[in-house]
Length: 140
Image (cartoon, rainbow, N blue to C red; front, side, top):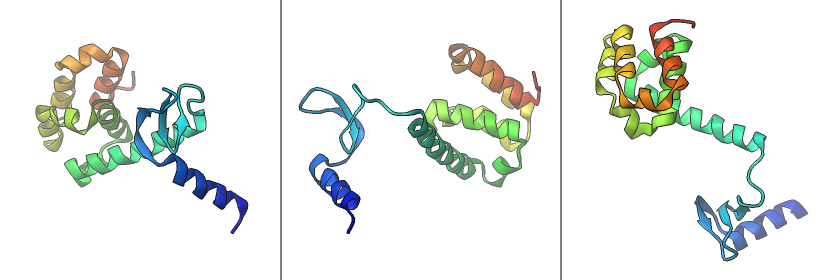
């Protein structure tokens, strides 16, 4: 057994795992196996790794919700839906019932209108306009 795996096992044993942030005994925001977010944070590479995992979770959810239709959409429309799903979470995204129904009917204009008429659209500024245009198929 190499030294690294021994050290890794020891830290895992002593730190324990937490999937959610908590305050350690030194009152530092901590996650995972004792990662001090207050002092260390995360690197850009770590953030990109988390993002890639989150994108995969969103794609699986959208595929489960919309079936093969999701994968037959243009990349722009897939990106629009994934962006919304990422931002809103699974539950929030599912509140767009009329938009989802319009998508299932391949009525992208109505789906875009449902996006534009939402409170969420007003809250997210440029993001909402970009997603609206992607849903329309507009490259602006």
